Image 1 (cartoon, one colour):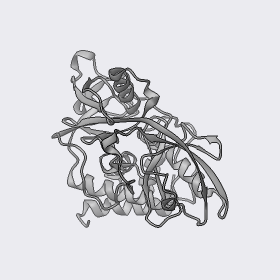
Image 2: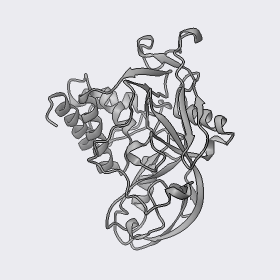
Image 3: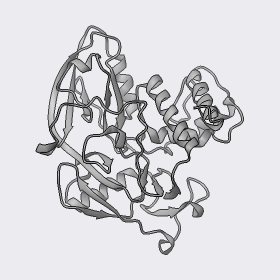
Length: 330
């Protein structure tokens, strides 16, 4: 549909291309992997088992463990299931994963792509804590993301913000409850909205879960990833793209256009919605790369991300960012 104030959600669309913001999701097909050339659309069934590439990844628990080997997953929830099986733990114990570092480094957070040579570190539940926060400003200074399987957590804390003054709240903490309301399974953009809508000059309560840390990892809390960071995830020449519709695909490394466009769109997501989600940003770039005008782009977004409703100015800015990247203006 053409652009209009807060376009209506498409209620008939229940599955999402983006696994990272579908926090209660996990609808990818059959737990299998497929070459990009064998997939001609997000919803097609996976190829026969004998034609699927057998990709093996190495993994450890971030606080310390032997090395495990995992394979045969097609989305984030299946990945967590394979990791849990390797270490004899329950999948809900896993908060999030980082690539090539055991540290709580939001620049290395696992999203929808894994380099074929990446080493996966799983951060599991640690200490639980309950914190009272007085909301003295309209904005709390938090950026929220999620793990792709039901857990929203803190990706960034802004210097000098309300939350920056509460020293027991850290980057990487899973937000379990807000004012006694359990939000497990709630999408991260909805969590960001809940926090934003809390009344000013009132006190509210958060229940948080820290990632488990080894003794040598205990250090002053991090503010999280910086928006301008140029750090790249992935060391292999190819990447495994995790999708919620259809099998995972093996693809080439992102082009310079894709890298720049995704980074800009991710920045716009934080600016407009208080979230960061590189996989959602990547999907929007993919949707917009061949669209001829903003209206066509808006209609394609509604088709692909039916449960989302973006303000018009956001859609225009994303369209402009994709165009700038195409023209090399970044």
